[in-house]
Every structure is written in C-alpha cells, then in structure tokens.
Length: 242
Image (cartoon, rainbow, N blue to C red; front, side):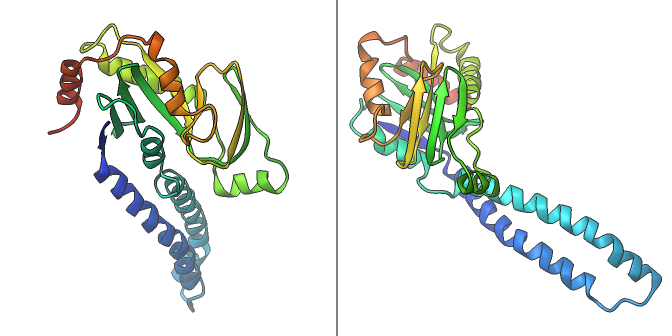
C-alpha cells in the first residue's frame, strides 16, 4: 500500500496545539500580574477595571482552541498510524491519503473501491441507530467529556459530507465512481453498538470486530467501480502540489 501524508500540515498543527497550551496558561497569569500592579492614575484604574473583561474571554478562547487542536493533532493513538496498522497486508495497489484533501482527513483508494474515512478518537461506549448517535457516558465520565471537549458529535453526518467532497473532486476525473463513506474508531478501548448504521462503523484495530481490514475484504466480491492507475495519477496531479 502506498501512503501519502501531509506531514507538514500535521506537524504544524501539532506545534500550534503545543504552543496554544502554554499560551492558555500564560494569558491568565499575565492578566493577574497587570491587574495587581499598583496603579494610581484614573486611566490606570480604568485599565485595571476593563482588563479582566478582555483577559478572561481571551483565555477561554485560547483554552478551547488548545484543547480542540490537541484532541485532533496530538492525542494518541494517531488516526493515520492506526489506519495504516489496520490495513497492513492489503493490496499493494491501494493508496492511503492522510490530511491531503481537507476537510476529508483520510481517503483510501483500493481495488474494492474508493473510501472516505471519518475517524473518531473517543473511548467509552457509544450507540448508533441508523444515523443517530448516543453516548452511554454518565456521571463523572459525562463531566469529563465536557471538560476535555471530546464529545463524539455526529460521525454519520461528517462521513456523508466527506463522501460528497471527494465525489465533487472526482466528478471530472472518474464520474462513474461512487465514494463509500466509512466511520473508523481508532482507540482500542471503545465499544460500539451499531444497529442498521447508515454508514459502516468499524474499528481500526484488527482484533476488534467489525474492523476496517475485514470490511474491505468482505466487499471485494461485490466491489463498486474504482479508480484506474491512470485516474489515480490524474487525481494526484490535479489536487496534490508537486
């Protein structure tokens, strides 16, 4: 399997997430120092009165940004690594793209078809009925979800958006190809109850069922049209800077 990863984007966002973490700690400290400086003039007094209303919202925004970016770009296991490990041994004619066709974070082209992969890093227990997702976290776990800002959201809606995005990119290169959306959980500590899911829900880890590799093998006998080698080359030339 050939793998193309936008390492520059991933590395840059990891660094930004790390910088934002330190900024989120520094902004409130600077604000406290400025507020407690001995100020005697009316202008200085006014400044010390207004400053908290600037510092607190700024600190909150920086903190939210830091947590969200950390979840997406720093938190382990990394989705690109988990997907690669889960796909070990598949056809060498396959291509995995990571962070190249954003906001679609992962795209897989195989002899079985074209797959847009929407990942989730969350651990815990989740249920999917059709296109509706619910979390079974309760009590302290639900509170921690709010603090860590790692709500699962709606993976199905995100997966369908990714499908539409890739089909739009392919419409002139391979108009007969249908993109198949997949939802893949990368944390081995997750448990999922999926009942008639609108989009297949899979694990990246091969020891868990259903998993990504087994799913691809199961659709091999009933594959949809995929991209030829020439179409893949045209696709890359059109959208990947050389």
